[in-house]
Length: 246
Ligand SMILES: C[S@@+](CC[C@H](N)C(=O)[O-])C[C@H]1O[C@@H](n2cnc3c(N)ncnc32)[C@H](O)[C@@H]1O
Image (cartoon, rainbow, N blue to C red):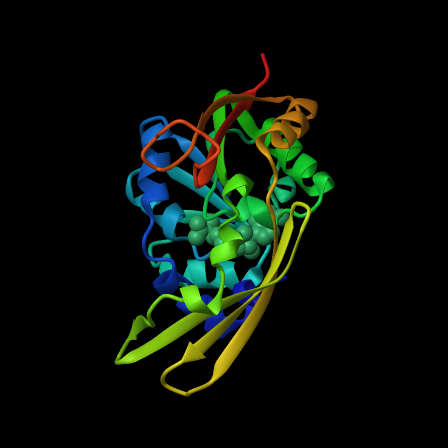
């Protein structure tokens, strides 16, 4: 598990670092109107799940990283979301959701075909007849990792009380579908640095479609960015809607 998702100090700064979220508005527009049952997969610190609950949805949110769920629960002062530490397959399979979603490129944490199949099978079993599974993956054609360098580091991010953190990325290896990179978090208050190493998978759409088909899900929509523009070679995102196969 990446330090990013289980080191308490990094989990605490996750929301500040990931504060600009056009994806949330995009997905909410695609969901059926509230009240409806939504499953947030790889929910992280729970910001999206909490926003959905605030809008009147019944939300179940799962994540395999215990520290992320702890942080999400701390934020949920009204107990509005059903938080589960684990995978979709850990949920009872007699419940059904009107939509499932995986935001923040969490899909790219699944490194093996077997993990993708297990996810798709578990979602297929728990989607209502007209339910959708929405998620996105960065487009491998645009090679975004070429910009994950110290030279492209953003200015330090404010954490409150005059504190800030600078995040510096460096790719260690890009091979096949996989990119392994290091992130160093330089904290202004202590002068200390924490490092996290991650590997992400950049799966092509055709491979995702093929695995989905074996799991009873079919592609019903794609977009190339959060403005709903068509997917093309230069699109930054591959945004995907899967539904139960007819
Ligand atoms: C970049 S964070 C995204 C969190 C949140 N969805 C968001 O949009 O901010 C990726 C999350 O995926 C979770 N994750 C890792 N492997 C996973 C898996 N196999 N299934 C579901 N979630 C996973 C991590 O624990 C982490 O919380």
